[in-house]
Image 1: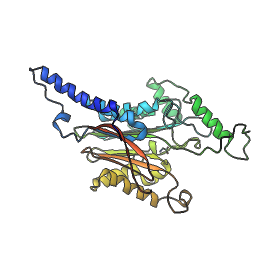
Image 2 (image 1 turned 135 degrees about the vertical axis):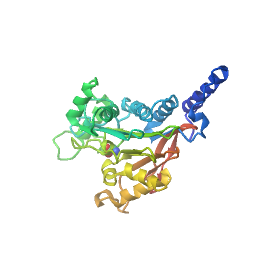
Image 3 (image 1 turned 30 degrees about the vertical axis):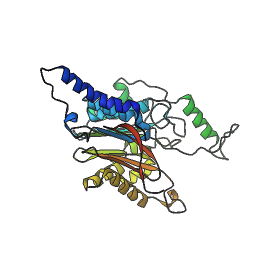
Length: 343
Ligand code: GLY
C-alpha cells in the first residue's frame, strides 16, 4: 500500500508549517500544538475504503483544531456529494420505487450526544442533518418527511438525488427483476443484485477526543421505508469517549441484530485491540445469522465490515471476507486490508 502523495505531505506539511512559523518568530514563543508534543498516536481517522479522501481531510481539519465530529462529517461529505459514489448521498442507488432514501447517524464523544436521520429524501448530506438533530433537539432520530421538513427549516435545499447513472441502474434492475413482472426487458444485462455500500468514519484527536459518523443510501432496491444500521446509534456507529469508536458497512440488518458498533467498543473496553474487537463482533454476527443468509458451508453469504479506533489512536478493521479500508495518521492517508473471518 502506497501513501497518498497528498496526505503525507499535508500531514507533515501542516505540522512543519507550525514548526517553521515558530522558528521564525522568536517572541512570543508559541507552544507547539499537542500533536507535536505527543508520540503521534493521534490524530487518526479510519473509514471504509471509499473514505480515502475523507480521512485525509478529517485529519487535516483536526490538525487545524476542528472538532472530531465536524472533521468526520467534512470527511464523509466528500462521498455524499460525489455523484460517482453510488452508496451514499447524491448518486446513491434508490429503493424499489426509484426513490433515494438516505440514513445517517453520528456520535460526539466529548459531549456524549448522538443524532440520526432515517429514510431522508431529497437532501444530499444526511450526515449534516443528523448533526443538527443532535445539536438542536432533545431527540436522537428523525425520519421520513418530518426529517426532511426539519432539514428544510435549516436552509437545506430539496434536490433530485438520482444521477443519470443511478436512474439507469434502477431502470435496468426494474426491467430485469423477474420473469413474471410487467416490464419488457429489451436491453437485458442480467439480474442486478441488491448492493450495500456506506461510509463510516471514526476520528480521534491528540487530546483523545473521539467521534463517529456513518451515512448511506442503504441497500439498493430496498423496500420503501426500510431503515438500515447506518441510522441506528449503537449499530452503524458508536463512540464512548473513554474507550474508542467503531462503525460498520455492509448488510445492515445483520449488524443491527448484533448492535455491532456498540459491541465493538465494548470489546475494546475489555482490553481487545481494535482489530480483535472487530473480529469478535463479526463472530457474534455469524452466530446470529439465519440459514437463508448462510452458504452451503455454513458461512455468511453477505459482507459486513467493522472499523474501530481507540482513545490511544490504535486502529483496526475486520470483514467477513477480503476487504480494504482507509486510514490516515502520521504516516498519511492510505488503503489497508481488513482482518478477515473467512478466506
Ligand atoms: N450498511 C448499510 C445498510 O445496510 O443500509
